[in-house]
Amino acid sequence: MLWYKTWLETRSRFLIGLVVLMFSAGSTVWIYPQLSQLLPALPEVELNGPIGRQVRESLELSRTYEGYVWLQWFVNNMPKTWALFAILLGAGGLLSQSTRGGAMFTLSLPVSRERLLDVRAGAVLAELLVLAIVPSLLVVLLSPAVGQSYSLGDALVYSLCMFIAGTVLFSLTFLLSTVFTDLWRPPLIVVAVATCVSFMEQAVQGLSRYSLFGVMSAESYFRDGAVPWAGLAITASSSLAMLYLARINVARHDF
Amino acid sequence: MNSTFAIETVALRKHYDGVEAVRGLDLQVPAGSIFGFLGRNGAGKTTTLKVLLGMARPTSGTAQVLGLAADSPAASVEIRRRTGFVSDEKDLFDNMPVGELIRFTSPFFPRWRRDLEEKYLRKFELPLEREVKALSRGMRTKLALLLALCRGGELLILDEPTAGLDPAMTEEVLQTLVSHVAAEGATVFFSSHQLAEVDQIADHLAIIDRGRAVVAGSLDDLRDRYRRIQLVFDGDAPDAPFSSPGVVTVKRKGRVLTVLSSAGADALVAEARRLNPVSVDVTPVPLKDIFLETVVAED
Image (tube, rainbow over all chains, first blue to last red; front, top):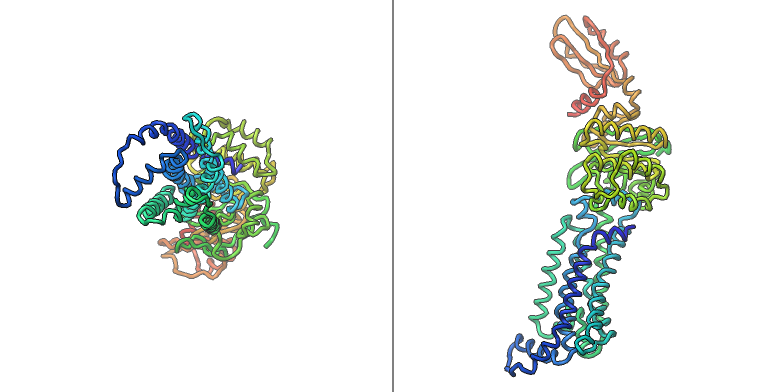
């Protein structure tokens, strides 16, 4: 029943996220034919500097369908949208219920606080896994409709990398939700942190492969076929540590 | 600790952010009693209930509920399995319909009473499809009470169960509690600042003020023990100290000296006669006066 309760509390955020990501996945595939027609017509322009280099690289990657899907879907659209919903789904829980209502009833149930937290984390992680995999499967399924194909295996590798690494953002929001009693401070703090991380990755050349969003988009797998195991291990360990700290916080809290 | 008590606290203290909410509370709630826990707003009633249910940890002292240590997380789960609880805000899941909230709650309690669920659904006329947030305060209280009573627990802990209800609804809630206890034999521990309802249904009470129990015992015993002795003198009443046990307050006003005793009147009357009063009048003390005078005496 606790799983069901978590589902009731998070389903609107989850379903909105699923619709947004599915729409985004469909759009990514659908506009490829128009883009591929435009690309040969683009004049060769010399682009210098970091931004110029990025634009040139984006154009080069978009000349193949695999490169286009990776760049547009697994680097740009999906991680940022998914991260936003991971942060939103991480918000809430017992402490914010204590100010909005419902906490006393939950705490009067014969269930330990640790179990309440475990179930909430487990249910939201399951939702995030769905948000990571299902829209990517849509990319694979829709590709033949535009005369292309995309590897199911690659789609799963990218999606799982994004899920495992991106869970850090969920876990940080989850942890902060056991510190602050209001609903909005934790997600706002994590959005600010994620934005700073993203800017830093773009500003420091060569950092992107090893940074959070680099691991989320599995850049090393795209370029060299190497799954970013170290990055995944570090982010997964960080997530587990934060979830453990959240348990300790809630166990100590006086309601 | 004694198993004949459903609840027992010894020197219980709880500090919150520098505030001493409970200050050395000693409490014994006999099993099978209806125990009124009286106190002014902010006296420490809700904090005590939270400690008993494991929602807050005591700073020091001990609290046992149904023979289990309330500050042990594992024992606390067992306490909640055997206890029905209604919070002061009638805190429920606002977005769930009534029927769904009942279906949600029942699986947590192995001794859930389906028969009582049906009985109280009929009695309270609760709309199963309506969301909790759309219920009136009275309906919300009835739902909270149903969810507490049907748990099949040996103990009911109710935090201001009739707060905000009109007199008719208050009467219905109180009668439901009394008939439930008569039929099921559970212990009821309820906090309140409504003296009339404690007087009406409780057989035991404790008055808590600033985190300490200032009066405790069975209501019959308190009614027997508390006496007001009024002495009238020829001239101004003397400023005499009384050495008899149980003197709660002494008030002088012109020729009249009024003493409130918590240990009967005999010893005090004997002592008072030595002051040569014109008249000595002994009267029983209503609960309201016991409450007001003990709490004021603390001030």
